[in-house]
Amino acid sequence: MTELSSDDLLVETQGHVRILRMNRPKARNALSFALRGAISDAIVDANLDTQIRAVVITGSDTCFSAGGDIKEFPDASIQHDSMFVSNRIWAPLSQCRVPLIAAVEGIALGGGAEFAMLCDIIIAGETAEFAFPEVRLGILPGNGGTQRFPRAVGKFKAMRYLLTGDRFPATLAAEMGLVSEVVESGTAFSAALVLAQRIAELPPLSVRQIKDVVLQGAEASLSAALIMERDGDRLLMLSDDHKEASRAFIEKRRPVFTGK
Image (cartoon, rainbow, N blue to C red):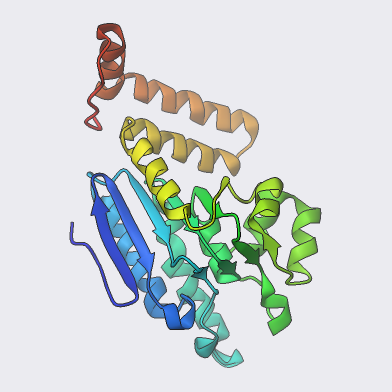
């Protein structure tokens, strides 16, 4: 597949890992429509590329993203159309079957925090900070912040920060359940890349199926989710990769997974 690098988004591939790096330093990686569109296109590309088994998304060493680009905030008369376009742009992230890992340094504010929450794993440097400051602008977090954040940390913790716009550090984000892991400042990307490479070495069908079942099951009743789990397991038991893993274990060798 074609790698969709642009001035705003740098795209590269290391083995089976695709790396997306936001590149608007003067705007603190504000999520302009152009940047969001580039990210969306790159996610679609990665999802269709059978050689890509994990994606790492990051910003700079001092800033993940300051959120939406205030210069592009629309007039009230076109707000509805703008939100429709924004939701359509972000849709490929929620539909992507490849694991997405956010590496966060510095600030992840508003839309930047919402963007990170669209990923499956968040690795944060210890000095990283998160916030949902939309209330101070007379709006609300409109790309999942009022829904994904409470689901991640619980209603009462979420309300504390959604209603004030206050920042909270990575360590607290981890305690609340928003962040997967906190690492030494400046090492979030390298830690995320190592994790992505580990995941990329595992059976890709199994990785994708686990992601599917976890995300779909979260929206279903427990009984329905358990049926999804059993069905997914039956499918994987028939895969070549499962047979290869079993043979490699018996033969005491490293398995070679093909995604079949």
